[in-house]
Length: 367
Image (cartoon, rainbow, N blue to C red; front, side):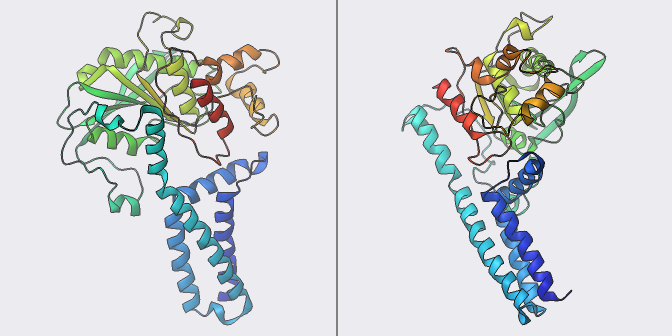
């Protein structure tokens, strides 16, 4: 195949990835491939633009424009580049969106009332250029990670967590508990949250990243019960690692965001604390991102019954028809109450796996 045809093929692939970032597929068979492709394109739009520019330059240098397929490929590339520029511009506006949300909730002068705890002067507020170019997990220069601390043993299985803190060992530091996602069936503490925990530790926080039992072996609410065990352990032992047990924030994404929200909304609920009913499992704030907030599909955002079929077979081990109350109790939307801690809900407008409609309804109920 000639350079012109290869250029057309590569350009078409790049253009389809860009198109999918704007119009992801939500049907069952294409859901996961579409999600991962759009995720990578959205998160790394500048990198996609860079590789497409480099590829185009190479193809043109090799004579790809000598015939019509090459010119068609160039046209597709120009369209793809335009879309990627739009995505990059949107990403650059993220900080403004976050700031406006804080102003709307806390008032224009909220900065003056922040608890500005001491942090190292050598931590930069801006993201370094090298991290933008190479956006891979990294350990902070001033951060140590204490791995595989056992926080509970359930059914012969040891549940472990990692601790992230500054090497100069802070005292009285605020605490962040990160909960990994993975659809309640996959994921580990080692795979998610590493950049966030490293950054927060550099800023003087003590971070915890906990494993929990996974389905299909585990049946909900086993996942939540384990994380409450982790929360109880953190309350009892965080001070040994420099943390302040009275200031705990919980965060997580996707299924981890679902569990973080439930952890915050079911504090000290004895039903989910078997054998440690008196332990304090309250948190002072919750920041779920692209979380699942509804198991009942009340907004009809999930494609047909695929999601609930998965929940019934793998996670809940009972259908919604047989036990609708169990699905409601597992839905953060149904657990909102006046005593809920502050929430900062982060969600993508075109998320294909966790519907933004559910996140918006969750926010409405919190407000």
